[in-house]
Length: 439
Image (cartoon, rainbow, N blue to C red; front, side):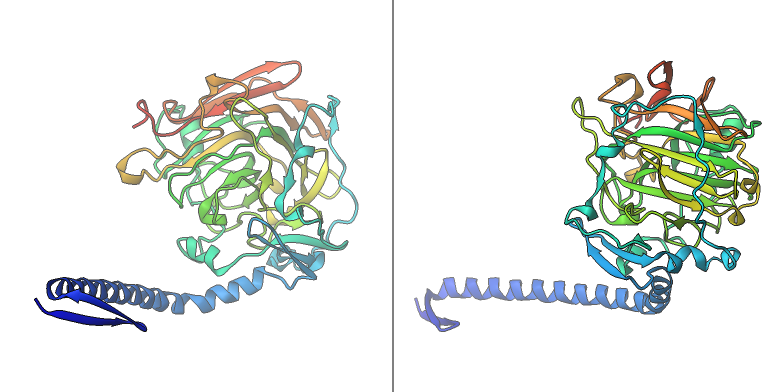
């Protein structure tokens, strides 16, 4: 049996002929696999480069429009980059309808409340945003804006879809008006909501929303809990909607942290509006709250519960729709010029949860709504909305009574409403999605 010497680096290894031949075969196979993998990776990279080369210039131009030059930049521990942008340079003012808009300096007239808030009643003051961790704050006269990246855009279906909800979401309202609540949403969105009648004149809404971190099955699905302030035609293309709450959306943010968000549209989600500050529209005035940034802590099963109070209302002085967070902290506003129907008043309010069910593997998604537990599990287990209120024409807050509820598929997600003196009108909602009763 012969002997073969193989030089590896500067060392010499001694093998028998058969062992050496085996080693050569292994090395050859290893090289071939690596070569094949490298070629495959190059092909994929080339394809990706070809696609991105057609899009990158448009993406960069779009990012240059929404990522305004910062006064200072803050690196958040969770990977976000927060740009402190001069308030008069923020993206909102690029909107053609706002070219002559002057940022509202006079404080809006806060809605009068018939109920005095107990300081121990809300945990909004305990919540924080992660970009505050190192103690750096945006200077006076600037607003914090989460910087968008090329990766953020590439996770979306297209540049047009970046920062937008899926279109044609008004099928929910058609189903509700047709009184057919147990039909699975054809566009993949499922809800568990409470809502007011559609004939009222409403000038705002408020609620305290339990915060969780629901699991998301696939990247293009999301789970959110929010308030909708609505006006317009539910079965047409002119629905106006103002929305705010918290959401988990891997596609939009690149992670699964719960984040504060806003949204608006004037044409049933077709072309106008967007999340947060990802397009011109919402004017931010607060220098300490970054819309789209992660919030913590969040609730956990059978232990500590955390919630956020959100108020949306129409300022009777100037007609802009303002957003308040926590203990009446002003975040910013949607200018009246953006809207058609909401330029006057809202006709309906909704509170509750929404998920995307893309039916991965042909089955119902396991993306959770709320805490991932059904409404009947109650406090500390199911997620809740409490102290549901609306703003009337006198700019007064009053507790909502006689709300209706809707869930398309109660085997997947459900909702149960109640009333008591401490929480006013409230409800538990949510669910696990896929389960033996929801295949």
